[in-house]
Amino acid sequence: MADPNLAPEIRAKMQEIFKPDDRHSWDLLWKENITPWDAGDAQPSLIELIEESGLDFARKGRALVPGCGTGYDAVYLASALGLQTIGMDISESAVEAANRYRDSSGVQGADRAIFQKADFFTYKVPDEERFDLIMDHTFFCAIHPSLRPEWGQRMSELIKPGGYLITICFPMIPKVETGPPYYLRPEHYDEVLKETFEKVYDKVPTKSSENHKDKERMLVWKKK
Image 1: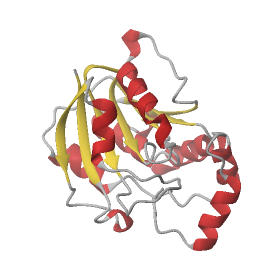
Image 2: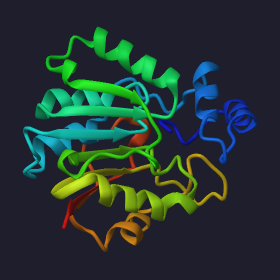
Image 3: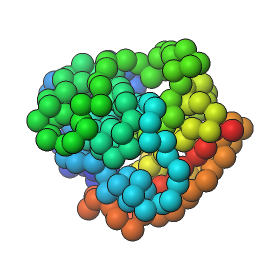
């Protein structure tokens, strides 16, 4: 959800098409070209985190970006960190868009990003293939709040001990009862991660895209 302040006609169209109990309705939105979450580039707040936080992110291994959309953040991580990065989306149309972006981006190391159609909640990997890094941007806010405990459990299962989870807490807007995007605050991540992760970074970024300003917070977690 790149812009939480959607025009009424776009929000109405989204609500007409999107069904919270049908994850495949995301693909219908892509097919209708209703993708207000598409930011057009990697998030400045993510770039700031990787380049300036001082955290010891892995420089070899594997990364995962669930709900990757057009794949901007996945391509950035593959390039900046040198990680074999899997961008995952439930929408086949999103995966096709991500592959087109990667192939045309001209970003050095973009070929280390691989895009797959998959369901995060059923995705399995052997223990030896668990991830060094997972990044969540507009995935947590897109799932129904009732799925958040399962989201936390899956993150715990997919990240290796000592690995990192980057969460961009966005959009931090006044409380709403409907979604997506669903209402969220940093404590909502605490509730589902505190048992298996240590929070090692919590900061309002100084560099944000225009529609993220004053609506996002960077939270980073290290797997215990």
